[in-house]
Every structure is written in C-alpha cells, then in structure tokens.
Image (cartoon, rainbow, N blue to C red):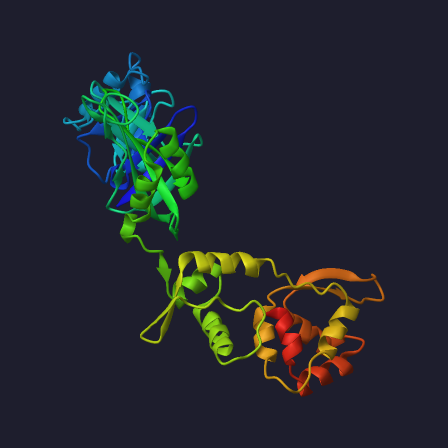
Length: 381
C-alpha cells in the first residue's frame, strides 16, 4: 500500500493515496483554454491572423476573450469555445489564449505541477506541491493496530469522531526501512483530512503512554505489523545499501568465510537460504555506517612512497586495492610551479609514476614485482 505524506507549511501532514496525486497545468485567471480548434493548428498562425484582423477592426479588443472567440469564428473556426480559466487542466496538446499577453500559445508550453484534490464535505479543496511542501513516499503494511477504545458511547481516540491507527513502514522514499511506523490521525468531521507522522518504536511507546493505553499490550501488536519479523535483504540488496556492486560484496564475504583476514568483516547472515546469505536490513545499514567511517587519504609523496614500500610478494590483492581506493590525494612535484595538490584516481597515479615521477624506477619496480601483503590489506578492508 503506497501513501504519500505532504508536509505543508503551517499545516498538518496530509496523508494521501499515491494514485490520487495528479500532474496538471494551472492556467490562471488570465488564460483561457480553447476547444473546437484543430489539434494540428499552429498558435503562431493564429497570432498572425489576429494581428491582421486587429489592424482592420478598430473595435477589436484582444483583452476580451469574447472578442477573441468572435474573431476565431469569423475566420472559420465556428465551433471555437473557451472551456474555462483559473482551473487545473490535464497535460495535453491544446490551444490557449492569454488575455494579458494578447497571444495564442499551447498548453504544453506551460509548467506542470502535482496536485491533490479532495471533497471536504462542502467544497473541493486543492493542495499544490510547491516549495512549501515536503514530500515523503511510504510503502505500508496492509495490517494496522487500531488505537480506538470504547468511551461508553463510541470507539474513539482523542475525542468523538476522532481515530488513530498505526502501520508498519516497509519502504520510505524508495529505501527499505525497519523499525519505523506511521501513526495516522483520522476524523469523521466535515472539513477534516487524514494526517500522519512517522515514529520510531520508542516514539510509539510515548504516544501510547500519552493516550493512557496499555503500553505492553499495544506495543506487542505493533511489533507484529508486517509479519512481525525483521526486514531481510540478500547480497544484492545489501550491496546496494552500502553503495557497492554485488561482485565486490560477494568477493569480500567469500574471502571472509574462507578464513582470510579482512578489516571490518561483513556481519554474519542470520540465515543461509539455498546457499544464499540473508541479513536483516538493520545489519546492512549498520555496516554501511561503520564502513563510511573508514576514509583513505595519502597526503603527500612520502606517504605514497611508504605505501608502495609496504607491497610484498606474498598476497594477490593488488587489483582489489586498486578497486577499493577510488580517490586519493597526492602531491605532484613540479620544479617550475612548486607542489600541486590534486585529487586523482589510483590508476592515474600509476600512470604518472611511470611517466614523470622522480623516483619512477623505484615505484615501478615495487608495483611490477610485488603484491600487497595481508597486514597491509587489512588496513583497507
């Protein structure tokens, strides 16, 4: 079940069914959409004809849309009519007329906008997604925990006609989540609209305490939402969460399982299904956060030299290090302009060493005849 939360400035968070948000074009109160014209008609042709018409008809007022319709009918478009102004229209190919600019154009030339419209019991209300609206898209569990209790007359939460219930959030803005919940506020009163807020489990607990509910009982029900099990991810999803490709994570996990020494080992999967490791979503997120703390920075030529010196013939990991170090900072010696600090990829470092480095023979020899030892590798994994 997909829902959208629009947080509107100075208002509540509107909870909206995703399929009820529509893309429209607002024409304003000076622009008219005109029906009864051929779809292939070029607006510029109409503008040229209207200018000639205005030159021979002194009483013609191009700011009056009735006059414009009269002009269209006189030049052969007898079925031309205005369909309205100040409204939202579907994004489509249609002729429009601007009474302020006094010209014809095409509806498709105007900016579109996402809107949501609903009946408040008396009128149609419209919310337009603009700079004052913050959007969050969520996929929700089908099951809910109702917080209503009998007050002696009705089942309510917070007053007559007022209700609250909770969903588990499965995805938020396209990312898998675990341990997040959507508290929905609903009302039977005219003029009201469902609103919602995203809560952690501890915040759900505080809400239950605020409502004077049986915290233990309701909390257990909330934990069972969506099946009552942690969100699970395979190696592909795990890799996407931490920003790696699947092969890189698979290689690291395989080496780890073979007893190889690695830095920041991948957490142990909670299950192996058909030879495929499975982790909880939270394990993947925690590992991403831990890995991001490891930054590699070689600040000068001496450190680069020391790095290459650490390469030994015992371990076949040179290619893996090239892949792991995406960007490093080096100082390129230049007798004319002094040291030039810049950020380049490791492959480019290798290239420059061979081309113009003062100690290129030393480095090239180290690179060609050596591979990274286990103790050096552990720093980067």
